[in-house]
Length: 132
Image (tube, rainbow, N blue to C red; front, side, top):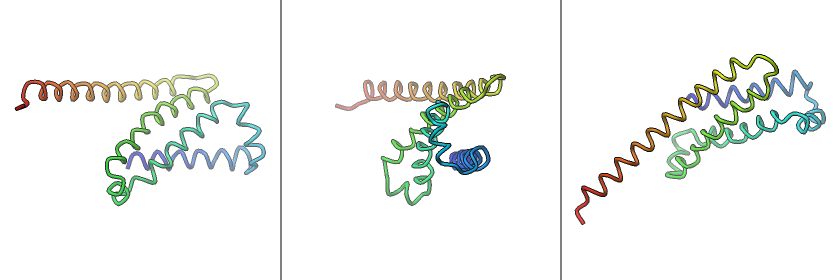
């Protein structure tokens, strides 16, 4: 559910930008993109979130099987690029984006630590407990 809430928030964020900031002017949006690299990062992040949101229902997860897990590893890239988008967007007070960057760093560090710990335990088990 957290991922779907993130997708909903990103959708509303993009819609507000297009509707309120640019008055639904796609020409202005196309002109704005090369001038603002944070918009490119936003689009990249949003494009990563679309397949994650589409593949969230249980029925699609079953259809994708192991590919679902591989697909959902895109969440790490999306999280990092969202923090980069926020850092580039802010003009003066960086405290809040840095706070979110720290949260992302802690979460990714925990994930890497867990992965390495599991990998080490698995290799130990295979090395010392196999019956071949």
